[in-house]
Image (cartoon, rainbow, N blue to C red; front, side, top):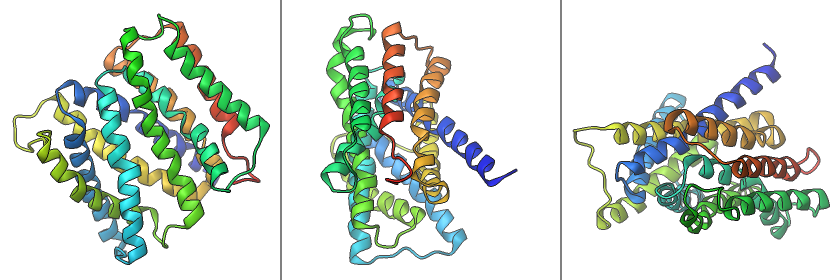
Length: 295
């Protein structure tokens, strides 16, 4: 098996696994769990898994001032803020809609990179932004696109998480990452995030007890945390292994598999307007994604 073939299979596996997180989140919140409590256990699972990887690799965790700064930044914009808001949106929107909204990350990254001086203006990529906006309008506009028209008020909340994610890559590209590798970065961010979100979960009454009895929502919560930690780390390794242009293809897979998993696990169905919106969003991702020269 060639290196390119291995990279393709790894990309497919990541997309399939990452697409599973939205339906699992929907199951968790449907059982009554709320954002801060779910984020706490998501980060706790990441600390355990990534800590084990660090021990196996015998890599120390840098605790310099620069490293601590990045741990805090990534904890906030990479998990705590977007995940807390996403869990709340998942209580009110179909899982497949959330997966389609996540495909807007590359489209949001483009204007962020432009504002930070990391990219050049491109009419083609601006057209991609237009396709993405048209896709969102198709979901918001026609009355038959959402099961309940009242759900449309939650779509802006579903867009907040992709906006936070869109800042991660440009920030690291602009200011570096203090020499941290992906596992160090994500472990440090998870540990700091755990300290930050723990008191919030307790104060808001959303802390989830680890004691039995356990239900399907607990299984979904744990599974989502494991998948999140492994796929997030795997994506950063894919970036360093195959480059940003190849890794950007995961946006299609996460969206596609997210919708498929939602149909299989949650029996969700969508109107033709939603399928058209998904097509427009994926065209937008294709047009906006970084080209080899830019990457």
